[in-house]
Image (tube, rainbow, N blue to C red; front, top):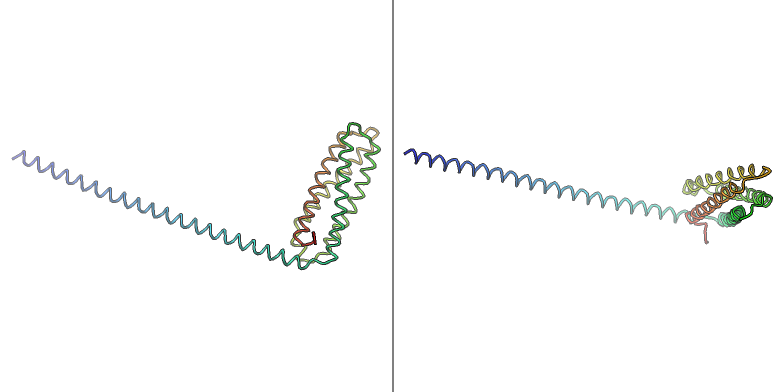
Length: 212
């Protein structure tokens, strides 16, 4: 009798354990399905954000293209002539900066020649700045707004070159100027003049003033 009771208790315990394990497994499966659903929802959300970002980029590019076309139609013959004159003056100034850089970096430093080239570069830079300002002031409000950052960048480059030329002038005023220092300043001016003209030509492209 006791043996039968023991067997019945064992069977009941086994059934209870199996039922509990089945319930836990079902809950885990539900959790897995929920997590999978979250991943799918998250993936769908990311795809939606990606498409929205691409659409926004396309709209921005279309707006920029429309602005470029509108600016090109606003460019006048006078503005193109002013741009061409300024670009030529800028090329001459850049050539003079390169010549001075090579002269100052030569094996022998000629202070008199460096003074002559420094003065010539100073005059060319002044003329170039005046022509660029004249061109910018002749633009209408939309044109100026479109290239405002480029104009500010070129102004900063001009100020750096101008400051170096003043430092070079002070150095060359010495009885025995430091040729290495002058050569270093001349090389920096050449680099800035190259960047200056590249920025100017980008501005010309944006306004439709170049290669017309």
